[in-house]
Image (cartoon, rainbow, N blue to C red; front, side):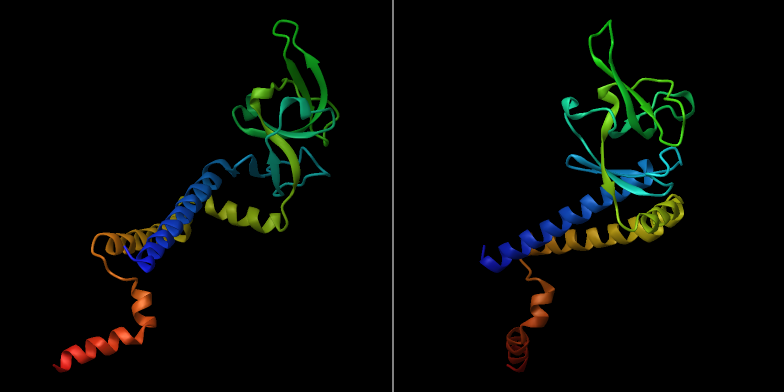
Length: 204
């Protein structure tokens, strides 16, 4: 296998990997209003419970942290167990930290800055998705796009279908290079010597 062919294979595999990751990330945004990358998660604020620090439609970054790094005053995102938003992410500030007498484990009392009283339900570390790091610039624009993508038809036509076509194109090109031994079509266009040789062959 020559160096150019190896480079073409690596290049196509890299693009396939990037496109696949992008598809997964966009699907996560579409379904969960969030996307996770390594220890970071990108979230969208949906309510006014943390005003004035966080406004509705702000996009924020949270980071997974060890339990010993959490303290009173930190803003955390956690999986809620309250009835009206059960199983959904909620972002509130740690108001107090206690110890469960039965288990000996910490529990966290949370409160939205907008409210006067703490949340009814405690939060355990296992349900904490991460600690607030910062807002994302142009969050309102990103939030608008995400809202539009909530429509399944818009999401498929504008995002998934073009990405799938792109992905299939690179996979097809990779198969042609590996199985059929073809050169990258772009390289053929950039190498006029190949065309001269072919023209010369036709004259014989």
